[in-house]
Length: 60
Image (cartoon, rainbow, N blue to C red; front, side, top):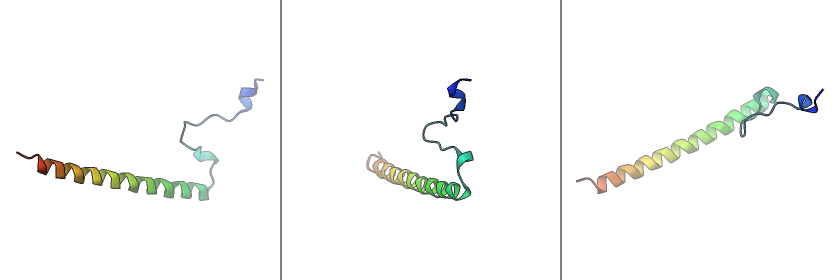
């Protein structure tokens, strides 16, 4: 038997193994993801606002 067979399979970088997490850990993970989604949506809104302002300045 190869010792590699004893090691748990690796999960892709940055992605936790959801099967190994408890319900509480999964709920915490969802909360973290929702916080990150809100942060990204704010960044998108800021970029759209800046782009709208730039378009208004350079409108011919």
